[in-house]
Length: 350
Image (cartoon, rainbow, N blue to C red; front, side, top):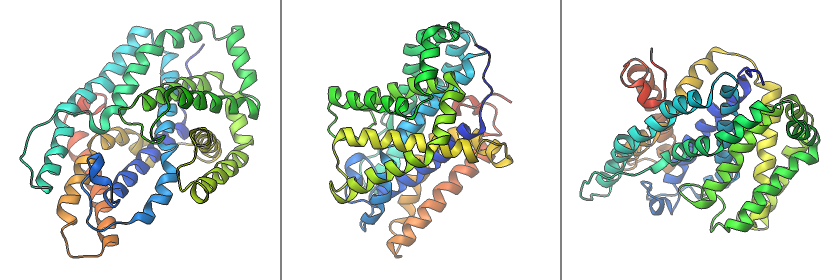
């Protein structure tokens, strides 16, 4: 197996998904149950926001796991297992530890301030649970990944290429996610953070993300050709979930819908986004640090803006603007420029 050149469309998907994550988390502030999962909650709700957010929720986190597995496949062609683990320790585990001790306790303090609680320093994974999972997947799956790398021309990889060159072969992956739900029996399908369901779903997505890049064009040509079919089927399943099941459809339908949305995203991104741009060059570097710090600015924006005597939609829009500008400014003028901070946010040294 030779080194695989990194793809612009995959980087775009990572950037877009992290951007959607920011909007999604802001939307939680305006739901009547936000405080029960640790978010500052507005006294006025925008419950209609949850319908589009519910569409995103079944595939946004799984897509990030897929993309993370793809990133390992891009990297593995030119690294030994020691180099891979060292590099991922620096870029994933170090920022995770730093965030657990500094970033997450900071937005917990803002939460305590808003609700006039005693200010206490608390360690927590918070939203950084995703990084912990990714690092574990790298350690657990590395032996398999390097075996596949070594036997790239073997019968098993040849069989995978043949399987994923057919649209029904890709649907077999949805069966794996369905089996996961039958075994784990998640209480809420979309509850990924620090649950066994989220762990095993992420493990499966991470593995198949690696495999999809490994098999190459056999996969990409399939999602490109059938992207409209996957999109249409996913949309139909979402409409059924919305109108028939009030957004709580059976897990096997959720898993299938999630997989179809992700395939359509890969197909459309491959068709339209696989080209360089200055915006991508900038955002692909900034997405990771912004993911790490975004909850601080979301909570700080909620602290400042929610008490204002303005309409609830104005509050929502102001928090969106505040969070995005705060994250971008901190990345551009602090994290990016201070050498000692760069590795703590997953960036390479200057």
